[in-house]
Length: 169
Image: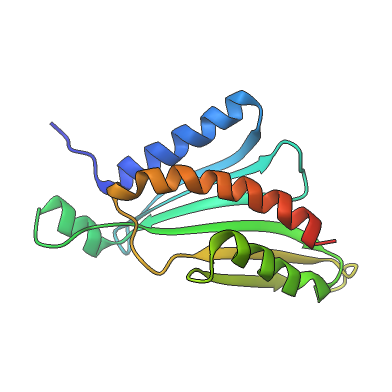
């Protein structure tokens, strides 16, 4: 019988929790990608959603596993295989003056042990509207024993959306 990988188990937990919130009417799932990278032999799962009370901020959870971690798990070799997790928020800004407040909000919610990255982009020739992709980077692997933490993170994501709405003004 097939034994699911840590990637599959974490993906199912994330997906199930978010679809429950979608069914309850709290969030709206707007995209889902489940990819196999045949060149590097890795997996990536991204689920994108919005809070139903806020149409301006799109959130995503990105889960990845590379070849080394897959091989460690499938061959039952020594090691503790895990996945890389990234959480992000994408929204428009009229000015970059809000960036320090955005960083402060995310640091307050997620803690100062996480790396907060803000990628700013804009389309040349368009109005002065910037796209901010704020990311929470975890510099460690996520394992199956972190499943309860993953479920708790969903509450942090919802809280982040509400706080970012205020900070980006």
